[in-house]
Amino acid sequence: MSDEEIDLKSLPDEELVKQMHDDLYDGLAPEIVEGTEILLERGWSAEKTLGEALVEGMRIVGIDFRDGILFVPEVLLAANAMKAGMELLRPLLSESDADRLGKVVIGTVKGDIHDIGKNLVAMMLEGAGFEVIDLGINNPVENYLAALEEHRPQILGMSALLTTTMPYMKVVIDELSERGLRDRYIVLVGGAPLNEEFGAAIGAD
Image (cartoon, rainbow, N blue to C red; front, side, top):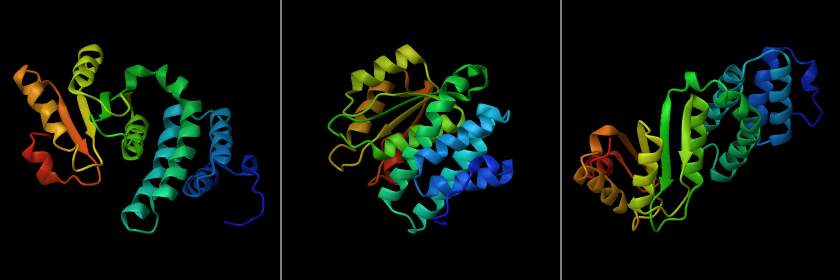
């Protein structure tokens, strides 16, 4: 990007959205906030702003992260910029809960205090139109059960970064099965050391 200051207000909608993609890629939170405000002032809905400016921008970041062009620090900067824009949009989105795709309860499992990936997933799910209940880190099975009872989501998401905490996901799934609750939820598991084989082996979806 050029070092010249870009006047976001002078850009037509399409160019502004492209500029926001660039700013998101560069992790420029103040510019994302300004761009979000401008689009809302121009009559864009919160849903359209979120989808076309923020989620699409993060999709581009995700592709370059997958391809090894970007690394975790850059992705975190982009995620923080998206979060800044989301803070403006969240109250507006909550007014139209009828349009939500469903509810997701998500949290990092007991013994694990890593939440970078989980936070990114939660943000992207929220951006896609889900209501997300984030339980944070170090969650024993009781936390998941209580949240499922309280919020009645369609999806349960569990995260683990450590190979030593991965097996706890099975503890949660087995407890759901024993209580006859397993089939009520789509269970998603994720984390750097996980793969599809592990997910299938522990009974996740």
